[in-house]
Amino acid sequence: MDNRTVAGPSAGYPPDLLSFSFGQLSELLESLGEPSYRAEQIYPRMQRGIPPGKMGNIPAKLVAELEERAPYRLPEIARKLVSSVDGTVKYLLRLADGNLIETVLMRYRHGNTVCVSTQVGCRMGCAFCASTLGGRIRNMTAGEILGEVIAAGNDSGERVDNIVMMGIGEPLDNYEASTAFIRLVSDPRGGLCVGQRHISLSTCGVVDGIDRLAAEKFQITLSVSLHAHDDAVRDAVMPVNRRWNISELLAACRRYALATGRRISFEYTLINGKNCGEKDAAALAELLNRALRRGPMSRYPIHVNLIPLNSVRERDLRAPDRAQVDAFRQTLEKHGVRATVRRTLGPDINASCGQLRRAAGAGDTAGAENEKEKT
Ligand code: SF4
Image 1 (cartoon, helix red, strand yellow):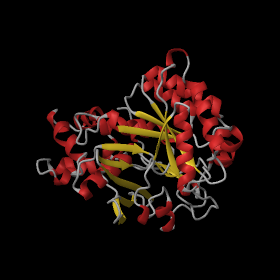
Image 2 (tube, protein in one colour; image 1 turned 90 degrees about the horizontal axis):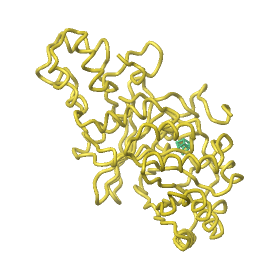
Image 3 (cartoon, helix red, strand yellow; image 1 turned 90 degrees about the vertical axis):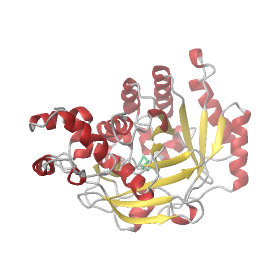
Image 4 (cartoon, protein in one colour; image 1 turned 180 degrees about the vertical axis):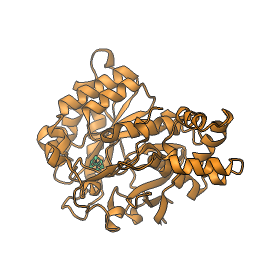
């Protein structure tokens, strides 16, 4: 059995059952002398949040063996905030080892979207992000990421239509688990069956991860957090840029688009006084057009999501006003780049990434890693 994607949170921790693919579960059950139909009984229902012991038709001996070899663990809801403005629900979830992460359920006209975390903390060090303030504590397993979708779906009693991998952590810094999660949640034999075209993976610009991902030939949307059009500003707000600069990042985006035929969307957080003047917008449009729209990609549609900064209490950064945001968007459009301003969801529940977890006192753990130490 290929156990690379089912490693537990720490050495000696048994693999979690929710991380198992259909094939891996079949092999495990076969090794336990179970009939071949057993995987079909267990796999979709465990992905719907039903533990083997509650499935009703699983022998008690097998339930005990599974518990010993690969325990079934869903995260517990430690805290839940519901926005009275738009119904956004923000969950603080407790994993089996006590670590806390955040998951958000957003309600749009086109369905429910769950934003999942992929790591406990983050070591990428982006200046505008609360999730990185305590560094990275550990990677999450594929099953733990899946558990977020199950917890949000079951708590709301509603179907999860879309998934964005945009919560705490950098998905490509936890490559094996993130890609295993995409396979699990989109598996038509599973219990969630979210189509890959409804999954979006957000990266801060981990170039070797983008190249690996291109080879997977997933049908997901890649979303790249750019946030600046020149290396000096990007170096200051995103330490990952000192490892892979803007030109290396956009070259990887071009390779990704050519290999997969999929559109990439760019995220751009507008930070007052740093990156949101009209000159910045013109320079951004020129940069994207030059890097992406040439040769076979001359008609490539470029889309930028503009995100007015959600202030981080611990850092002295502020959002621009509405007029600045509108002027920025119009300048991009004038240069042929489509842009939308992201609606601030759950403004009354502090829905920005990592803030709830910090309020609960998590993320200050000694020994956590961060990118500044790494590079
Ligand atoms: S924005 Fe994403 S990659 Fe950057 S520090 Fe926050 S969680 Fe990590």
